[in-house]
Image 1 (tube, helix red, strand yellow):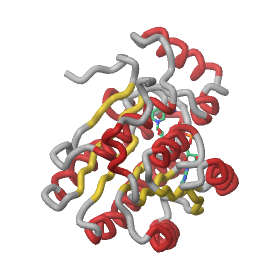
Image 2 (cartoon, helix red, strand yellow):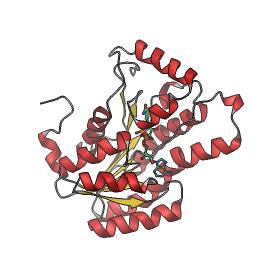
Image 3 (spheres, rainbow, N blue to C red):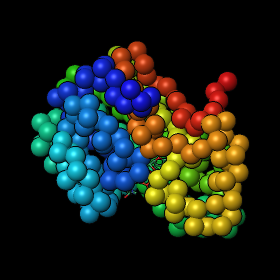
Image 4 (cartoon, helix red, strand yellow):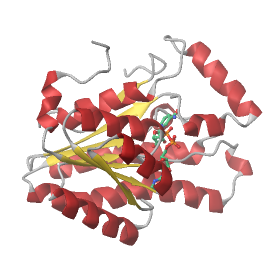
Length: 258
Ligand SMILES: NC(=O)c1ccc[n+]([C@@H]2O[C@H](COP(=O)([O-])OP(=O)(O)OC[C@H]3O[C@@H](n4cnc5c(N)ncnc54)[C@H](O)[C@@H]3O)[C@@H](O)[C@H]2O)c1
């Protein structure tokens, strides 16, 4: 068995209903495949409808729903329709994200708004819309995909890192608010991972150089594979109710918690 293939306890996802935001590509697509293999029906909530529909054709247990996670009203309609189709909701994976690498003093408020809209408001919106539905089923699992940038900071990613740090604090706060009601809230922090987003970032020569240096400084000396992040997400999606409010880095040893 490879170290990131499903384990027997994930059979616990059989018959469950899951939403994965940003599930059309990269880490999100790996999460969709992983949850589907483990028995869940999965709604892929993504802005990129074409990519989401392509993935849904490949994964029979998944289907595509278009939405911008930063738009509470539009996301609400999309989640309503997904939950009607699945007869409820058991698992929410807040994965949608976006980044643009630039020194903070060279950025402007329009860029900050876009980063906050996707990376922070998206998490607040989906969580706000999901909790009542999870409670209808007697509880459930929320897993947020943040970033090590939110734990240790990252030059050229100040606002993105602020959103991810916010997501980490939000994870712990909502874990406290929902504890004892059957809902757990945990967070996975990927290090640099081989996805379309990373490819986009590496179009910038300086960012590409920084990324190479980060890989050299990583004890594992390579990028993460999306499937490795998905395995950590699946762990939290199937973990017992006492595992809540936790932050797990998947970074090949680049960042280690004290
Ligand atoms: N790739 C990395 O190195 C890395 C490192 C740390 C954290 N992360 C985080 O992992 C998550 C996934 O990143 P990825 O690298 O797979 O990115 P990606 O760009 O490859 O995929 C992100 C997906 O999110 C969707 N999306 C973007 N904005 C959206 C919106 N407003 N509403 C709905 N969907 C939207 C995109 O269409 C895409 O399908 C993000 O939260 C990202 O911040 C990635």
